[in-house]
Image (cartoon, rainbow, N blue to C red; front, side):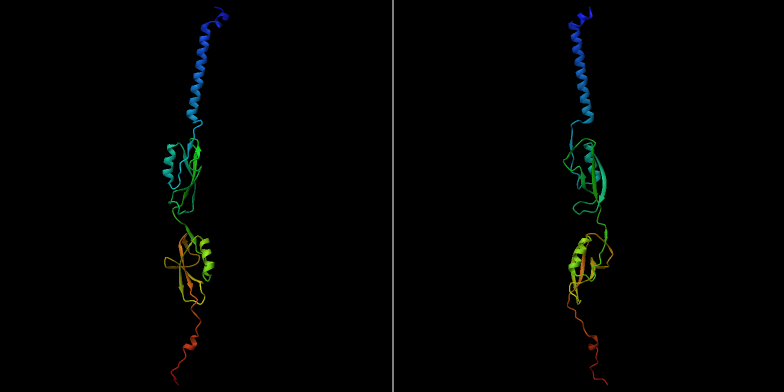
Amino acid sequence: MSVKNFLKSPVFFKQVAIALGIIVVVIFVLLHWLDFFTNHGEEIPVPDLRKTTVEKAQEKLDELDLEAVVLDTVDFNPAFPPYTITEQDPMPRVNVKHNRKIYVKVNAGGYGTVKLPDLIQKSYRQAVPMLKTAGFEEGEKIYKPYMAKDVVLEMQVNGKTVKPGSKVLKASKIDLVLGDGKESFTDTDSTDVDTTGRE
């Protein structure tokens, strides 16, 4: 059979059809193989990791082929349990690809210490903003005899007097001992005069 006749024969067209079929099948399998290994078009919603420990967060992420990366430990936030995640990036419910890294920040284990500001001889109105700016809370007001009213005479924590510059746990309540303005100057010499008429 000549080449010309072979190209026109049913056998040739059958072989071409088989070859095209094999090519289509190979391309189909290859595309699905790439999709399987690259997760083409597949995205995962990021879970909410806040208020969980890094260990538990990683367990959640392992199930989704994601990874937790700790960026930093932040100052203690009482709204979150100690040593738990306070922030994450990407945020919860954002769709990401497999193997994506989720960056987190972790809450400190408790408050650090802060230097107590010098409030002695400051007025009550001056003292309270200074306390709050330094990270403390206002405690009780305790009055004692003193000529100037509402002037800070002492600072106390849990009933103990503390000096300016002392390191105290942040967010502690600071009690202020204030003058009541009722003590007046007395002439001690006049009260010591002998009135017995002794010669």
